Amino acid sequence: LALAAAAATAAGLTAAPLLPSPLPTALAGALVVPAAFTAAALAVRAPEVPQLLTAVTRRFRHVR
Image (cartoon, rainbow, N blue to C red; front, side, top):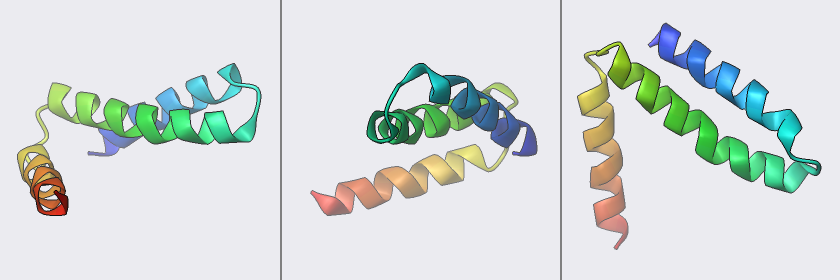
C-alpha cells in the first residue's frame, strides 16, 4: 500500500499545477488521488484492496 500511496501522491502533485485556481485543483485532487491509489494498489495486487473496495461500495449502497 505504500507504493500505491506514493503513486497517488505523485499523481496529485502532477495534477495540481495544471489548474489555475484552488477550488478546481481541490476537486481534481479529490478525483485523481483516489483513482491513482486504487489503480496502483490493484496493479501491485495489494491483498487489502478487495476489502477496501467492498467497504466503500457497501457504504454507497446504504446511502441510496
